[in-house]
Length: 232
Image (cartoon, rainbow, N blue to C red; front, side):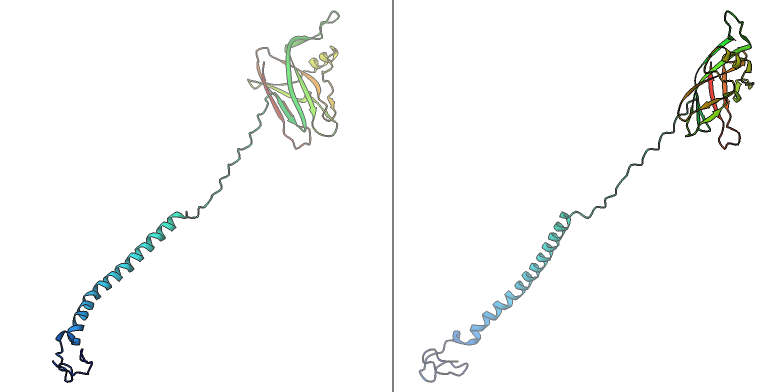
């Protein structure tokens, strides 16, 4: 240590300077000067450590919050499922009970008429039915691309009691003789897609009102018969 007056090196712990005799103050000693500083540092050390730890924890918490906000702001990928409407099934065509297709030939029952006698005029009594004549009037069309012959006279008529009738040859002949151009006697020739009027006659009991007409498929044909149901 040095004397504060003459700056002479003085022995540690000396009370006077050996050169100038200056009294060395006790407050000048390093011990008394450094002791408070060390105490202050020791007191401040733990506080700095705690503050540093709190700062680290605060940074961590803030990082977690920011990450949560960012993650919540971005919507997670959405899987889009395309829903296609199932097409409605095609409606089943309604069968016309007055129509049948047999061997590419369409038979449509247009109307019917009833009479006791066919061909009666001023010169002839005509042909009289055993029961009553039921005359069926058809529109017939060849749906193929070739000319064909048909014969409605081979059709069978069945009543509600199960009785079965063939066409009346007498009634058909009388209808031809009466001049009805639609009357069929020996079959009918059809041209492709040219509808034609054809009529056949049945002799049935007057009490019968409901019938099924079966038009058979042609011989050696793979087609099925057609049925036309009607009431009078």
